[in-house]
Each structure stands twice: as structure tokens, then as C-alpha cells.
Length: 449
Image (tube, rainbow, N blue to C red; front, side, top):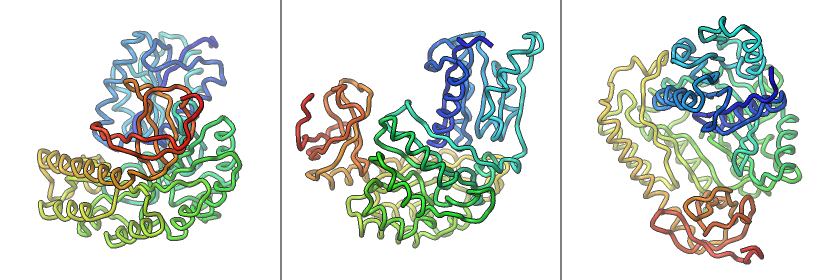
């Protein structure tokens, strides 16, 4: 194969997908491919798919069309969760040439090299390579680098939970973890490249340690992982992504509160403020435990940012049960919401449950909670005005401004100055603009400002 072929990548879904796309892209580069932006003409387009939301499914066809608009003769491959769950459906999309499932995606260059070595006349139909999900029992480490100011470091994959609405166990297999040694090696590699912040990611990162050496035994815990990472030289910020409330232990919260590198920001899925619905969802906690986790965090880190995942329109969610969730969230000391409108997923117990909620009602409830999220974020930002925080600036010019995030996830803005990109600065938060972003003053004016 010619070494000058151009390849482009598009990622749908979560931070975990971004970490894997980046690792796969580095594999292409090592074999002589030239990585280009997805909006540019390329010979090969790789789409890393998501199955969590209905919207992600629908976007796939649009993205394939976008690729062929840039190059009508392009080769298009679909990988990832949706490719594992619905390989035939993706293969039937006009313009798709290759579909790879959960384990096969990490060998994508081999599949593509084999196909390109075949006579073009024989490549008339999309090829599907998708394993039985029971075979997805080994771990492949990944991290993103070069795409954003912060890096996403994968530490865990798969899930043993059986939430009734979720397809992730069907798409990614059993819970399994990277070795502690390899996580630390990857973190050191990321830091050596000048990246200031690492976000730990996985499907269920609080379950870290399970399957670390190919067995179900926990050789290490998530707390062990945090302690080890905190001692790695060169790392300036570590951020925990989504972690289940029943797996977020007091010892971890206390450690973060006194850590050198871990920042005071937690994203904790709730899904519902109704115990009745939590049982139907087969979540592993009740709302009382969630209150306990939030209370503990705020007790030792009053300035901590707490994000919440919540699902609206789950089967059986009556008006009263939705209002129970709404009131629960209103009274909870949280900072923002990620609101998901329930959509039926094939092969999940929830898809055949009674009490289906009208889609119009789902939309209305989603809008109400998104409005509550705006109020919660505003209140959290207001509580931080006048405080001294550390901002990590990003690298994009957005309408004449550079943006950044404090350690506790307050988003700030400042007139564009490229010298600030990927740098950390102490600031005093001063006011909230009409766009909801925070203005600040430097505690010490940088020489290049």
C-alpha cells in the first residue's frame, strides 16, 4: 500500500471513544498514513460509533455522506459500539465498506491493508468482522493526545452491571482493567508531551482493578490507582470522569480533597431521584446513598463541582415520579446536569416494560431539567466569584476569546491570546457574562499578556 494515503477520523460518543480513536489514529500514522481533518479529502474515513443515544445512531448516515462529499471514491469504515451491536445495519448504509466490532477495531490497519491488496472488483459489498461479545475479554490500553488541551486516559473497559436501559455490556463486554504499571506508563508518556491535564476514563472506572491480570480478582482498587497516579512526576492535573455513586468511597473523596494533582470535580450518575425508578433501572443504590455522596464531597471540598447524569421518560415515570426527581435535584447541592431523554434500545429489558412515556412528554421533561441545569450552573458560578482559582487555557479562538476551565470546572473567557494556550494561571473570578461564562483578573499578569 502507498504510504501517502490520507486517513480521517470522526468520533461519536464518550471520552472513552475519543481515547480509542486517538490510539487507533497513532497506529495508522506509524504505518505511514497521513492523518487529516475529517472535513478534508481523504482516502479512508474511520467513524467510531456510539450506541448510547438514538441521536448518535441517526448521525451516522449523515457523517458517511459528509465523507463521500469530500471524496466520492473514499473507503469508509465503521467501528465501535454501534458497529458491534448492529453490524448488518451499518454495513447496509450506502457508502460503508468495512464494519469492525469490539475487538476487531484495534486491528483495523490489518483489515484495511488486506482489503486494499485485493482486486477492487472483488470489494463490492461491505465486509463485517464482529466477534461474539463474550470474546471481548481482553484489555487494550488507549489514550488521546494532540486533539485537545487535556488527554483522556483509558483505565478500564466493559461493565458487569445490568442496568435495564443500557446496551454498553452488549457492546463492550465484561469489566476489565489496564494494569497499574501500564496506566502509570501511559500517564508518564502523556505528561512528557507537555499536556497539563489527564482525565481518567472508562465504562465503569470505579470498578478499576477487576480483570487487571485477566481474572475477576481485584489486584488493585480505584483508590490504589488514584494514590499511584498522584505520585507520578510531571502530572499537573488529574480529573475523574464519570464514577458510580456506590463505587465512590469516602477514602477516595478524602484523598482527592488533599491530593497534589486530583481536582475537586466529580461527575456522578444519578439517572433518577425516585427509588421506585432506580429499582426498575436496576441501579445499585438508592437516592439516600446519592445524597450521602454529595454531602461528603461538599463537607471536605465546599468548592467542588458536582455533575449529574439523569434520564427522563424511563418506562413507568409518571408525572409524580418525574416531579420527585425534579424536586430532589432542586434541593441537592450540585453544579450541573447532563440530561438524557430515554430511548428504547434493542435487547434491553426496559424496551419491553410497561408504562411507556409519550415522546412529547419526554421532550417536555428534558427541557425542564435542562432549564434546571442552567440555574444550577449559574448558582455554582456565582458561589465562586471572588475566589482564587487556577485556569488551564485551551487552544481555540472562539469569536475573539480564549476559554479555559478552573480546577473545579468553572468555564472562563479572556480576549484571545495564543500565548495562553495550554498554560496554567492563577486568577480571581470576577463576574459572569451574558453568555454564562466567567470573567477574571490575573493574580499575576503573565509577561506575554
